[in-house]
Length: 296
Image 1 (cartoon, helix red, strand yellow):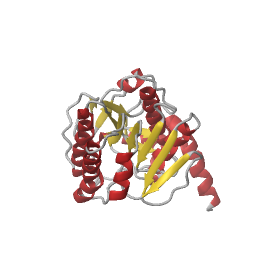
Image 2 (image 1 turned 45 degrees about the vertical axis):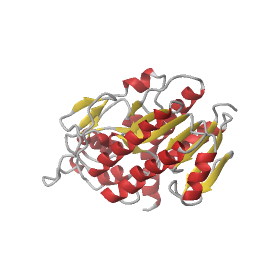
Image 3 (image 1 turned 60 degrees about the vertical axis):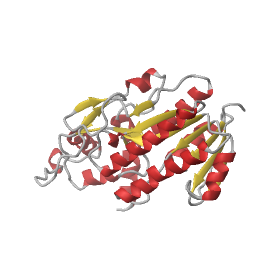
């Protein structure tokens, strides 16, 4: 099973979706989570934090082909992001430096919050990263630690920057539209949860097949769109009149108005399941309507 021993550090929704795609392809998968999860067949679990001494010992003593790091902040604060991202990457780096079995490939799930652009610019993997908020700053710090893992000469490091993730169970935007909240002219970028999993599975399998991964991939769908246009389209799909969305003069433009270019990812051979919000929201809207009707 060469190239197919896989570890997810942080086994949440995206890791679960990815492992379901890969488990049927002969991958041996382990997931680390703080609380018990419902696991797909063929996936084993280590309970605990990636900073726990016993978990770090297991990680350092097991020869994984690929490690996917999908972290969440300990709290929505600078200290929480430092603890959740930076401290975890530093602990992993220390463990692997002292290990005789570092992973062949590490994929670190990052965010487009590392970009500070706010003038509707197009950004890609080569764009300058100067985040203006603590979350982007800490994630960028963690990115650098993840890239440094390749300094041992045997590990490939790959950063995947996801834009705003949406999908089943993530209906906050629909609820805002239902409440009549209009959006601004700021650009938004998004990716469906199924495509997050698809991108990770694609890169994992590229590496397993012997292909060289780029150091960074920007993973966002094929159509950046303004918040206002998105909400207008969603309102129409929900059967709401054009006058339903009300401009809020107190509303501030969303920080970080930029347009994400996914050319590198497409050129690697990935095909989006949902190339835009229109395809991606179809089933979400249908479920949302059904739930609303059942509550009447």
